[in-house]
Image (cartoon, rainbow, N blue to C red; front, side, top):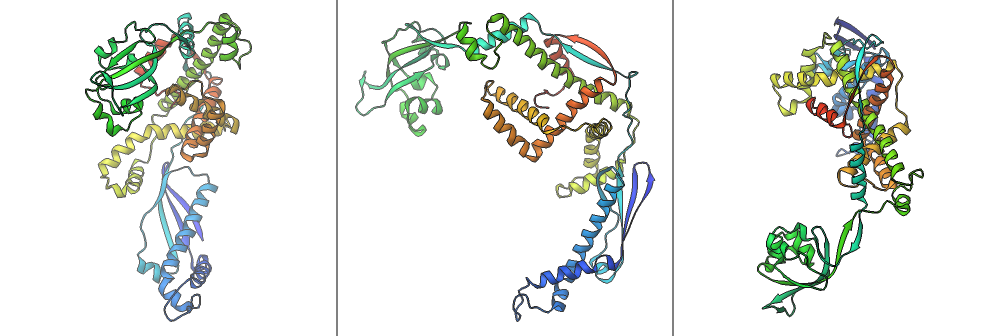
Length: 463
């Protein structure tokens, strides 16, 4: 067997694999004997079909299979050993017909290969890249303090209703103003009047006191919403329409009100159990500032990472790609979707920026020996998990739950690859900051948000 490559230019080559009969005949013979042990053919006991009949029936298919396997192994071993950075996959120039595969003994396979361009990743103090320091103002801290208050409101009993209160009591279906025999009754029903859609029904709760009995049209109050009414009344959704124009008596047993917590010793021990140095409002504000500065530093790192790749892409804008081969490869990948050459051309043009970034990442990681370890990957997976929980209002999800989802994320191939790339980018950004000159600029959080919105930069939590 012989494998060699001939470059037609810097980014295109023809890789040739030459295969002689002795390179594959032993594997073909072995495979046919394996087939023989499994073949079930009329007139013969299983496993005792003459090898000549097995060869006649399966010989060509086995030969093609073994040749393809040998060629593939030889080609990819050569690419790996010679450290050839291939874009896409090698593409065969001309395939043999079944007739040729059957008649010939020696073969020569030529593959068109798209080669990654050589990119300039040299960076030094003469290279200047902007780094944004995002400031934390007193107003930012005030906002976080209020957010903590909202998250930790406490329930207190109230004598009369105010907007936002929770009302509990007994619901009884009425008929002609009296409890209906066999009608709907719900003990300990919980109502949130502020979410009622009908203003007339909502207004019935204004300043109402405990032990008051109200007459309500619940169907009207919730505009016939089957989900809300079936949940409130404990009935099947199919039965909700029966409640139209039906009145219910609601005897108010209790009124609960959420109020801001007191910033006392008990509050800080409960809410900041893991931050022992947070014992009063002043130390809480200091902790908030430190934590926000840490998070905003990470935002600055992320923006630097984006700008770093853009800087290097601009530096390599003259790089030449094997566009014709890439378009042909893309069209082959999407053959089942019947993509036209125009479709392939447009898609390849769109993927070039991401391809450039991927190549830059690989070369930088190799140059600076950057490879995230297990602890760094787990830390990032936890951060991503926490951000996703926060989107659904679970900003204080239990650590064991976060760990569980983070571990599952790293077990999923697609998600783990995403985490690995992000972790690599974070480490590279920090490393490159020490290599170049930082053009430091300070922005408020609002100014930074405006900047990333203008540049259409993806949120770092989900990037």
